[in-house]
Image (cartoon, rainbow, N blue to C red):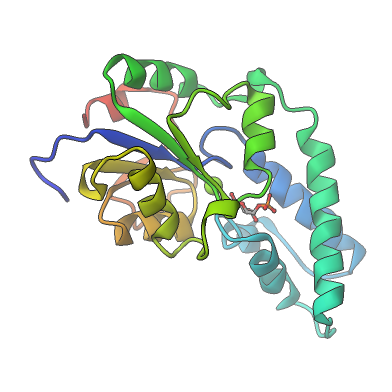
Length: 219
Ligand code: BG6
Ligand code: MG
């Protein structure tokens, strides 16, 4: 296995689709916009949007349209999607934390493992706040702190720096193809959750985090 013999001291979580099912809300908000624009969009295309910034996601959706949009129109459309998304995440509560995640966080804290969130979402802090998790992590890196989105390793390297753990001693958890590539390029152990095809490049693939010992056994 990669980084054999390494003692892992930090775990870096993606947010959307890992800690909570906001990946579904991103899909539903894009679907609403695409339907309004009469552009074909389905869950298969959506897999390529996971982990990708808002404007890059829009560009992927517009590949299925013959219409040409100006930069101003693209910003308007991205804002419109974000308005739909913000409406959806208003109803998020701590009940929406995915199974096993709280247990895992508590176990990692007991073992003095540093934990961080690495999300390219500009809504990451609102989602964490609604989940009641804003103060649970040692460090949070979101779109504000980075220049390059996933699959660039910058966001995971920034997180490792934030928790003061060498990248090779970190485990990254992701549900997106771009995110797994970012973790691998950062030299960390990658754990993929969710759609196994999407995260096929991960070192370890799990269905979800409902069994905390799947991860605790790696430490
Ligand atoms: C990522 C999601 O976490 O954040 C992507 O996986 C999303 O689907 C991206 O496009 C940007 O999010 P936001 O909230 O800034 O539009
Ligand atoms: Mg994600």
